[in-house]
Image (cartoon, rainbow, N blue to C red; front, side, top):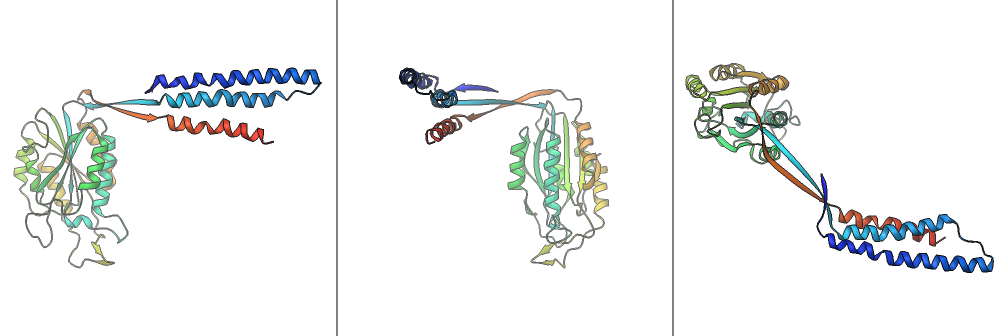
Length: 321
């Protein structure tokens, strides 16, 4: 952190403040001589101190404000070289399910968990995609957590992407994940790759063999699956639950098949801490490097100008007595 003046020559205003200060000293000296000849009592030193403080502080603060000082802060972001992570969030309609109409939906909980996990991977580039029966990239792996949070807030919503077909019950197809290792979701030079899937697990049948082949082809893609599901959850609309939806008890089996096919591990949403520890372990051993430098500036002039009112108000208050 450092302080820099944008208009350093403007600080000459503070020097001009010496003029009234010299005049004040002259007036005080003459007044003391007159009082001494007349035998009058001199004012207390306290009143002089207040006036002197105001005469010094006001031009000083004005001079500093005129110089337009700014506080510069530089933040260096270190990220791991050769390691990238992709978060894939299930946005099928079943992710609207919740324990009650006023309770957070599966999608809302998945968003919250994604942000929490992203904050724990602050030295890793993290990208974002959504999934129904196809996968849609929203953000290629980035070192900026603020950009990630903005994309989560604006892009992750139900049926984004909309499923390619019309499905009466389940639109999610874990087979859609097969494109990730081969379609540019990771930088070509990235050797350590991790995919984290946030889903309720209510997938249609999928080709596990295809996933096994694509995810294990060098450079292999590690996988973590976080499941958001309860058999007590329903989809609510207008105060009523959707009679056409019932939680699919086979979701746990589908998640287990996905984890097995991709050589990964599956966790319940309550096990976010364990999933985070697993992610950190998978990304260990890659060296850190400087990704970028962020500079922020804070203008001090408005605060200094406002501070001028303090000594002036003190001086005026004493003169009013």
